[in-house]
Image (tube, rainbow over all chains, first blue to last red; front, side, top):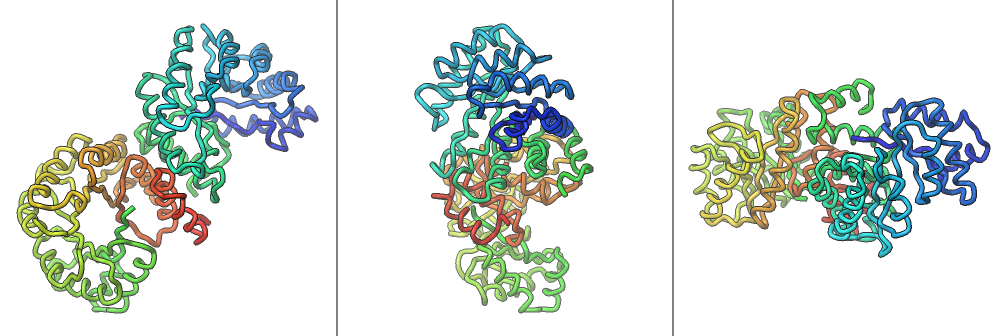
Length: 264
Length: 264
């Protein structure tokens, strides 16, 4: 599993406050704690600051990278913000995200073309949000082929098939996980990723439902997750599911997690 | 999900004691508590009593059926035991189980042929236990076709693809769940079922691993489970997974379980 730690996001009150106060220590602490929890990428998002998003994302990237060598996932729909962050980022960043929305696609494509950047390809277009497996595959095909034709390696592409709430439609869970399976089959070596909390929108016991959905997605091939790495139950679910999916040789990660009392 | 309550099994010490003492109340209490927890079938097993299995299974069926109208799942590899239980059973029982082992198959087939009995078809043959998806499908094909040719309706067949321990082979989880998917696709209207605790044999945190595996099997189509219906975490996992799998209209069961504090 490729883990993207989601905690440095200005939609979280404590992060928004830390960014506004330019509180280096607060941001670095959240970066470090996620790195120690084993994330592969540290998501950085200053999206709530409409006018200052560029300035702040640059500061966050620099602040984070002074204490950890984990790469950042630059989280913004705005190509200018992404370029600003990339200009100061050390190592190979992830872009979160490109989509098939015309303007976003056209402006971000030249930024990733021919590079080794990792890129999340969000299944969204100007026609709106996908509902069915087919909706997702149509968008994924165009997005992925667009990236491949521009010399992005397939293994650097992370398709996010876009989770929709189960409370809106009973089939939205399966439409998502079946899309994961199809995408993983169709493009050999590609990755799939998602932030899945949207699945439980409007329902109670959301954390439990989110964990259960993560396990189902892993059963269908999901290999990337945007998560809170401090959420023990979620991490335990992922580690157990990966072992059961045959992706953990000799159950070594599972046993290590057990010894670290993750299942306690 | 079709639930088979597993608690009346003489391999459990308290049940063995109750059977030996012919303790009517003790057995009836375990039957009632499972019926109240919503099982569809009450498994009855006196397998540890080699010489008295026939006598005891008859007593258990009669004892259980005096307090609940839930049908029993007659749990024995011995056709004589099954016949004895069926002779006193009211309503339509489930047989747990027929297999492709020659003697067991030949003696049990006439008992279920042309009846409305439910029957668990265990993917085991005289050549031993299946390991791969293909192993399981070969056995399932012969078993299911044998039953269908003898006028057993497809919707009365519950294939158990047989769970093998993950600790023995990293692939044993996926080989099982992929077999579930193939069987559900190949025979329209059939059911799949399993007692899945064998998956975690030899590993720590078994209950959590079992729950996670159940969710993965549901993501691949499993629609029957032999479970302890008093295991809140397992029941919560099943109910959440079924909602996510689109099998719970308007998430009614999920919401009901939430109100009953199953996710607490």
